[in-house]
Image (cartoon, rainbow, N blue to C red):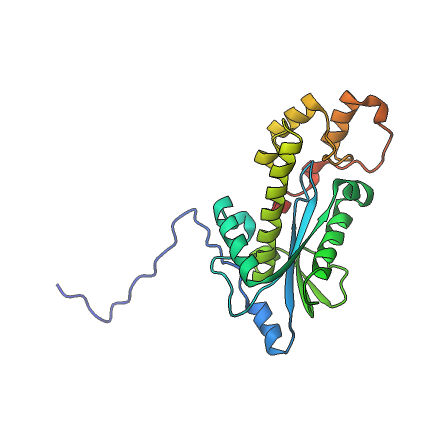
Length: 247
């Protein structure tokens, strides 16, 4: 029996339990370019939540004519795909990175240290941008217009590119620190408060790369070096840090 041409096709329903995720776009950047605004940078950081290692910030100016395919929030990508896109972004874009050391994090607190590193990354770009998109709710202290975008690494292409540069740079750095401080497993967990890291911290005590005022580090220091503990009102509990900051 032939099918009636007037019969409408039934819409395809998405599989149950599957959430469609829209990749970041270059729409906001193109809107600014049409208004004559250029260069446009996206910036993001990696490493706000860990107990050890620096925060790494990155700023990226994508070439509108040579945007690598597949750029996405670094957290949605496999380690292998991040490495591939890292190389492609570095080859086609202007970029810069900056680091906030554990000492600066201890001195300024994690939020201020992260914003400082983001500003430094923007300042280090080869050409000063006219507009900056930054992931999160806090603007960065730069000399041009700055727009904070909550969840920006999954929305704005330039921010997503910066998230990849920051994440891969920090992961490589933590693997290098693992050679300097064996036993903590930095090459595996990158400094985050996973059970294996907490066990190593309790067994070995804190290293020079740990953040002094995060609660598990204070507990480990009190166990191994009790004479160094002083009362402090600014102890940071990493469990309060949203794991979404793990980039």
